[in-house]
Length: 356
Image (tube, rainbow, N blue to C red; front, side, top):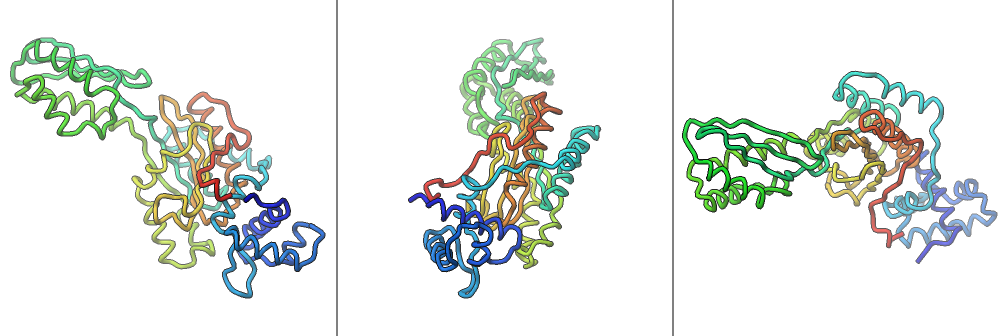
């Protein structure tokens, strides 16, 4: 059932006050923040109702309320106000993007800049859009040599001269070319399995291992098309009240230190999008008590990049999303030739909206 306008105003007041104070929010504070013109008793009744509906919870019997993951989700989906960046914030971002240097140096600077702007650990992830082989050309040169030519998605071409110490026929190369075009095109690296290679060898009568040589070049090419991931500002977690427990903080820091864990987030937003993942919406157990905000940008050359932050669910989502969207827009313009983003871009939300 949809919330009444009064309950939405109360929920927004609780979320925003809790973001600012990190303390449970009581009825008197809500009354002063909302200006609803009703009694404190009415506010208390509404807080109880929001508690029963799962949007708020009461950490102690005598305490005020704090938002739940469901409450934050409704806030992000419907209630938060769009945040305009200040002149100083936009100038700081523009200076950071204008520093020059190679991409690695730029992304390192961008990560540190995002940490400074948000006070949270920042993620920088560069990932290729799903790269596969569109066509395989095998060019026979002589009985010991041939050329492998791969046309990849994005119309990138890779080639390799293969010279072997034994002889093979032009007919075998022709057969291999046909089979590779029927069985190895349009597939990702993980689908080029030993079983597929072995079945191809049997199909063409390859007893010399040419199939493995060609498949190895495909795997190498697709593998090097992947991007990388890094994190900066992990120590900032220790400054947050939610991570005063060193064990809890260290578990999250250890998770973030693994680049494969970070790369798994690269399946998140499309170009120009901002995505917010709140608490239990995160797939990784280590992120269940945290929120992740990710902004995607065009990194050029068929590459997609992500800039993001990890922090407590008590996060100023509006401010964080606005800053990351502006950074992502600037990176798209700088690296991919896209237009810079002056605000959110499209805010893409992951969650069960039926709960809202």
